[in-house]
Image (spheres, rainbow, N blue to C red):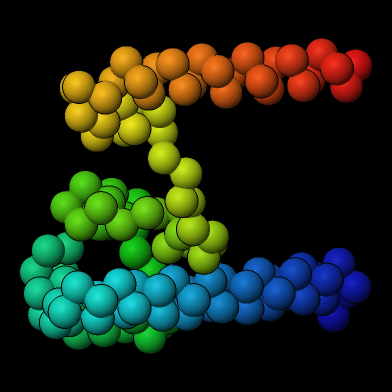
Length: 129
C-alpha cells in the first residue's frame, strides 16, 4: 500500500479515537447532570425526542448528540454546552445577569461599586504602563 494511503488511514484512526473519547466524556458529563437532576434515561430521551435506547448509547459514548439535540439540552434544561463538550465549567456571571438579579433598591449601590472597581482597574493599568 502506498505511504500516502497508509498516512491517511493513520490520521483517520487518530481522529476516530479522539471522537470516541469525546463522546465518552460527553456521555459521562450528561449522565452526571441527569443524576444530579434525578432524571431517568427515559425522561431525558423524552425531552430530547429520541428513544431511551439511543439515549443510553449517548451516555455510554457510542453515539453522539446532534447540534439540534444540544440546543434542546441548553434551551430546556439550561445545560452549559461548552461544559458538556469540553468539561470546562463557565462560572462567570454576565453583567446583565447580575443587574437583573440585583434587587431594585440595591442597584444604585451596585452601580457605584462597579464604577469604583472599573476606576481601580483603569488606574492600575495606567500605573503599569
